[in-house]
Amino acid sequence: MGWQVGDRIAIASTEQFSKGFSHAFRITSLGLNSVGVDSPSTELHKADFINKHGVEAVLMSAEVINLSRNIIITGDDFTHIPCDSSVTNEAQGCKCESWRTKCTTGLHTLQANTGVMKITNTRVEKCGQRGIQGKYCLHFHKMKSCPNCEFSNNAIETSQQRGIIVHDTHRSLVENNVLYNVRGSGIYIEDGNEMYNKIKYNVVICPFPLSYELGQSGCTIPGTDNDQADTSVNQAGVYTRAGTNDLIGNRAAQSFNGMLFEPGARGEATNQVCPNQVALGRWEGNTWHGHGRFGTYTLFGPYAKINSRSPENQNGHSSIDWSECDGFDADGNTRGIPAAIANNVDYDNVFVGHYEAGDIQYKNHASLNNLNLMYWKETKNFDDDCSAHITSSYYENGNVALPVINSRIPY
Image 1 (cartoon, rainbow, N blue to C red):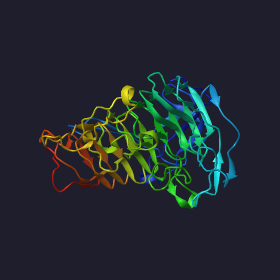
Image 2 (spheres, helix red, strand yellow):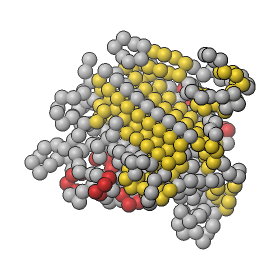
Image 3 (cartoon, one colour):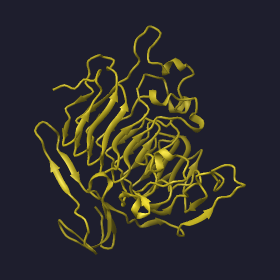
Image 4 (cartoon, rainbow, N blue to C red):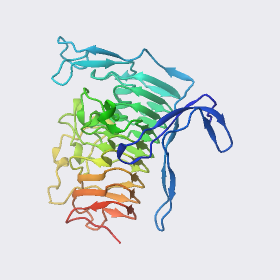
């Protein structure tokens, strides 16, 4: 692994419902099958491996991440500044609002509009500017189609406004990053037109329980431009407005929500995208655990449909033919396109699922020890009028609430 004595590591809580603490340590020794640390843990961090007949093995184990890197981007400690009544745009400074009287400043990185941005094997700390738009730890800003843009193998620790942002950018790679003590969303896909970005094998750990008694509510934070993504309304380890991106092998622990897909369009995507009608990317092998509300979560009825969007030709926008957003074509045929959430694991959350969603199948899903193993109010039949909404999945120790009609679950 390349770990060394003196490295800083963190171990995720394995308590239910965002009630535990994660802990950071220094490595004092390395053995063949052991790691010595500088202090004992005050909590039990579980490592369970469940193998049920007919279901793929389920790993329910605390994440252990290395927060040390040879290259460090760092800065001064955070500073709290009062809002400025002369500021009229949140991107220009700390704008006064009824709900914001001060902002928090830290370092930020970004590349905008053109070229290639690549940051790898780097530690970024004391970053993010709460309340000032566009000031984040790692930020692809309107890079359009950028297949060589890459954030990989980085460690982000202690942020006041999100972690990794993919904004109006397509085909980028965000892989093998670890994020610890990031307030607001850990990974954030911003406008709703983003396509074909690969978000793979990242780990987001919130070290604090979702309890106001500690002076902050987990990793939520007020005063940003998106209360759904960052505050105690719906903060998430991974947040996306855009569905046509790959989410593969990611893990998040202890946030308010694990992964939140909230279809929406803002910025240049406003009135250019039917956000809850887009095809989903490859969502596979993710693990969300210990969250205060949902593990897997989608809002506003994603009903994927066939359309002609393209990053290169239309910057991820829908074609001018808005009929592509309709549920039926001119001949009365439905226009749904199937999608699968495959091999995901949800455990120790309060909820898993959606209020409404269509043409989405849970395949090889393992949901254990959630108060609501599956919460799904409304759906529709698949276009083939045959495919199952849930197949080859395993549910244990919790409630299952499914649509009264139009859902199919094979035995």
